[in-house]
Length: 515
Image (cartoon, rainbow, N blue to C red):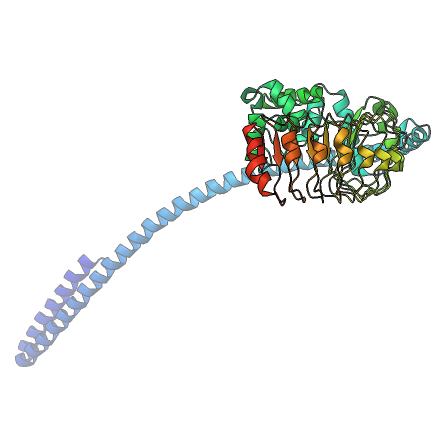
């Protein structure tokens, strides 16, 4: 029932009751009682009004809550509608993805079929390749047996042979071969000092002819007192650059390579694969220095080989070289060779380096009369009589052996450079006839008499250090020992006359004297 109607009705009823009560009281004569009752009824009415007010407040609060709930409901309905929209879109996307998945599965299925076919094809090709490899192997065996292919047991030697084939066929490669196998041990091109100087722009910093002379004959430049050569010798603590037996043409090729390297001129790739005897016919130079090589098997096929460089390996057996009769240059320094009998018939040899090995017997060298340069340093050689007939020798190195008798050298009149230092020699009279000597090293022996040097008028460099020499008057008597020449007399018991008179006389003539 409506609150506005309820309140007046209650009021009217209350008044009616009051009036009726009054009338009744009047009628009955009990007015006082009626008045008391009316007062009680009025109190009840007041209480009812208070409760009514509270009820109205509660109703108002409930109406506010209902309104808030209705607002929340409306917002929830909006969210539900949005979620329904998102759900619809998601369902559409799921349908699209399911369709894509179906397509992808179909493609995967097709690819699996293709893969199976490809695997089958690969299997067929592998089988064919295996058959071809077997055929190639069989063919290589036939070619090896026929002497058309070469088997190289030593893998390090095989690498060197491939490089030699490259160097023999690639343009501009001779200088590269020389630099990589010789010069690169001590020098770089543009990467700074290694052992010797950086060679970048060397042809613009030094005269080309001087460079070629220094590369091929540094000892002669030193002996001649060349200021540039002496400056380099002093700069690098007296270490003389080895010549490695290079010719002037090879030195020029090396300089050309250095220039090409600076200009970054490209070189072709080195070859790989089987080595044929046809490939070997083109090889005249083979360099395999410090390559860990121990087995020379296969070198017997290098019949046109003229130069062979094998320094610093682990070679003991050189029998494979016995038939290489075209060899002109052979370097075997720093190996484990003790038997050099395989060299007996290599009669075209001009340069032979077998220093720093275990050689004691040199008899197989007796017939190598074309030798111009021979290095036997650092071995166990005592008897050098086999060298007596090597009359074409111009450079001979016997440093650090057990030689005491050098009479066999008396006839080697073409000698220009001789190193017999660090032996057991006391008598050097056999050298008196070696009138072409320019450089002589006889240091670290037991020599006291040097009178045989008085007539060696071509001498330019002389090392007498570490002997028992007191009298150096024969050097003063050698009138051609003069400007630009040098002599090392350190470590000798020089007499006062030698120190106070003879050395000043030599120095006055321009001789560089070390004592």
